Length: 72
Image 1 (cartoon, rainbow, N blue to C red):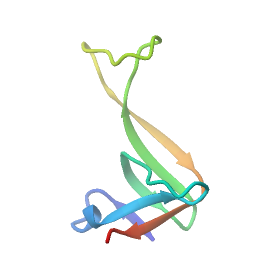
Image 2 (cartoon, helix red, strand yellow):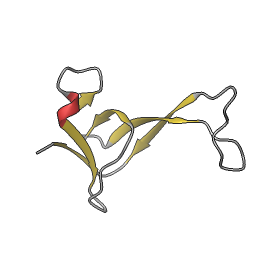
Image 3 (cartoon, rainbow, N blue to C red):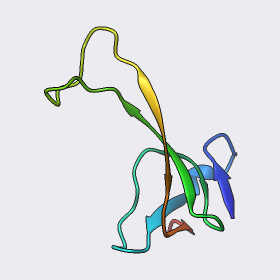
């Protein structure tokens, strides 16, 4: 299954990491057939603190053992 946050029913689904059973936060797009998913996360400075000025979102692409499941 492929899900994108722009789909009308995407809020009804979670992406689960099958290696530990936890929900993956901040997923914008996922394909559980290939295991690929995209997250948008805030850029951090080298000290690990979020920068207040010039903050930006960075797209991270991952590949893993995932499953898209419908929320209960």
